[in-house]
Length: 157
Image (cartoon, rainbow, N blue to C red; front, side, top):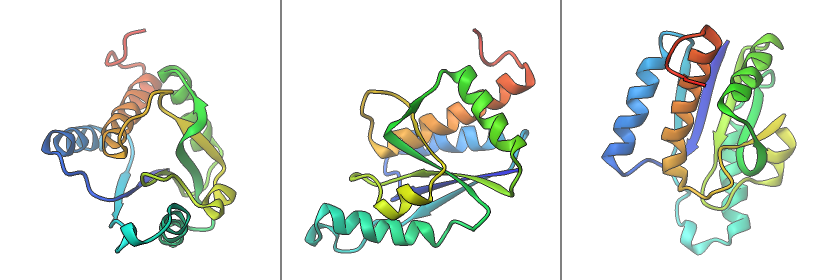
């Protein structure tokens, strides 16, 4: 099964870009991971937060296929330990389908349409991080989950 991670906007900090590349390269040994970056909404400063979420939601939904399992990275999502996230991911793989899609939204969160389309919500922390930082952290956690599933020594419990 393939994993797709859809992100709003680009990461502007080289250390975060380098971290993403590092973990995406490591993940190649376990599964296919596709990272898709959507550009920020044009003229977003002239729009309300709800309008930005709606426009981002429309663009995101175009990248999601009917059979995809969609998980939103959301502050109101479920928190997992790394071990439980590895189990969560394995269950998604076992359910079949062609792709598990994780969505990292913009600064204002997600549109109602995207919440309705999603099968779940995941929170990486009760702390707040920039959506740029979350990307690197999430790729590291995906890599960690794969090593846990394989019983490899990267994760020390």
